Image (cartoon, rainbow, N blue to C red; front, side):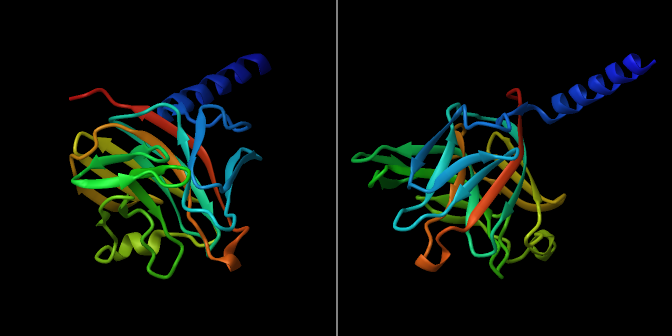
Length: 223
């Protein structure tokens, strides 16, 4: 009876994991990820990826080695109130010393190179734009949350928050803690890597951290 119950519970847990898609983080190492851009410190700790801000460095990104096109991405995050962060989707990289062109803009790979592309914002500041879509290194804001008060109020300061991010063709939609945040149509990038950002900081904010956990992706078939 005990064995049967254990098998049933194991089956239910496996089914739940399948429903959430593939885990992008194994909970104990950074296997499958590569750092680009700045020199923020990333580590695996207690089932989380932790990003720590350091001095005198530009924005840093821990990026998936694999690229993704249409998908549903779900993850949880907790950020220091003084640290800006974000989740890159369908993003790209201009290597150090090289210039690439995208969306009519020339993007220079400075020291450490330059990550560019769609970013789902993590913004603990009073403007509360978490869940909005910013075009990192390229066109700046594509859709902020100035006119979405419910989403701005959905952010939980000093607590774990949850993103759901859907990319289907030119449609990019985001939810923050179950509240609809952004709904964007943009066809510049159809594929690219996923990245976890630690923003460059002022001297007094060195050492602030952001954490991510339960990172799962479900790849979608093309319509």
